[in-house]
Length: 181
Image (cartoon, rainbow, N blue to C red):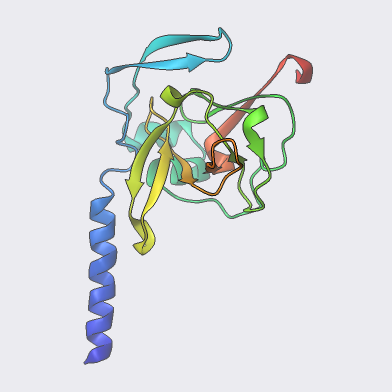
């Protein structure tokens, strides 16, 4: 009897956790809303409309792994990401909508197995929400324009900000800087 009660409580906990997360990708993706983001190419802030698509549209645009991570809040396996060891100069962008997210100068090796950054390119270019999955409370980082799940933010980063943006490589594209083109 105790075994069944334990299993029932565990399943109830998982169900409540999933419900508390809301709709994957919904954060920041209210269609037609205008937001201000920083554009690294022009060096200026610009007004852009948020992007909202249904799952079928995202599946047509993204690979299976990109869709799983960015739209369904998945996580790629550590130490497998194509951009983990990238040391080129440039800008990391959202794989789903192209929003500039991080400069290469803010990237560092945290030893965690995912690309890590100590600050976003601009605070306006990063969205945050509470993530209560896996029976813990974390801060999720997402794209403010399309709502793509990027990874999580922790308070154990380098001294400048004490922040570690632990980002799934598959959620990013990389735009080389002039020296690396």
